[in-house]
Image (cartoon, rainbow, N blue to C red; front, side, top):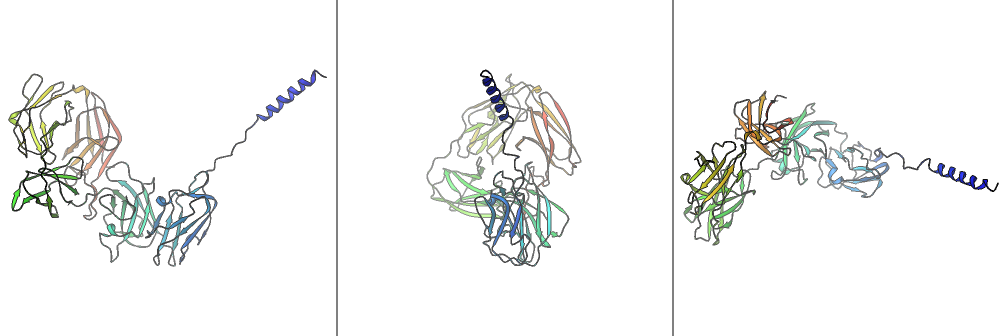
Length: 531
């Protein structure tokens, strides 16, 4: 018996350990169920609403997340409702701080902002509706939103309706809040505005940067339907967002150096006319773009004067300025090349000057190949960008020497260049690929055919006035996104919409699959624009 007791205790211990390892306690299945509204005071859908406070009761503890961004009140109120508590609770209290309009249906869409406290499951698109009149307006309008130029559309876009009554005018989108509004929030490219009354409306979409329901052309993107819409309607509306070019406006110039003013602007700066006067004396001037700035440079030969008059005219803008002058040094003539080294087939060689050029003597410029043989060339000077462009035939596996002798380039201040030398080289043709695009069902010509990278930067472009076959020769190996732009006004650039002129953005069509071009390959692609 004494020998059996230890063996008995050992077997009993093993049995207990074995039982203890049979299972583990877990927290149970993850909660994926959204909170449920149990009661609202007043009830959701109330009419003849006169109160100032609304309470929503849920079946579990809820919290508010990004409610200031997610909540959409339609029609917009002058002051945002006060929503409490800010901590987890089984109820939400809404205090209306604005004076409500008579006989109006209001909706408060909380988006995804009401969530359960533990897992963050949202009460998706929860909406509370009430009317200050005797019935709830029940009409709706639906549609889609897309960016007019880019493949990706902005999120949190307002879609708005303005009543086109006797007080309506086109300036309303700049000054007044809409009658009805919804928001695409953080993921949708479709929209639906509900609880609308019958009538005639203006429909617009607004990427509202400052969130005030008013269009600011300097900051916001706008999409609009060109014609008034009548509700009720079964039509689905497509709106295209674009950043509109504001009307030209010049800002007061300031002196930057001897003989140079800087002038800020809004709108398109090309073809600005700036007239400078020192008393009755007219001062010759040149206007150029300031690199990477919304400013232009106004150049003139220095004068001994305390101030000069500057008259600026462009389109419908005309304004006179007076600029005080100080004695300052003029900018020095400096020339820089666009490329110095390997030049690819689709690149262009140019020289950029810090000061504007007024005289170019091409007899003092030479282009020689590897064998010191002269290569015929032509130049073109872009005065606005201060760029001297070179055009000459380039052969594969060749080297070129560009020499600019002293005095070939003279600027506005009568300063000439010193000796300049640049070296360029080309690669063999097999290191590049070709892409031939065959356009089908072209709606109209001309078209711009562009190859971009994945974020929309244009890498290559061809312009076709009538040909359905477009060739991109000498491409560096890459993957390209293809887009085609119908150039309706034939100005060789994409134009956004203009609300006041009621013109829509020029049509842009993307070819869905990226096109890969490899070295020594010819890619032939059919692109149907009729879809």
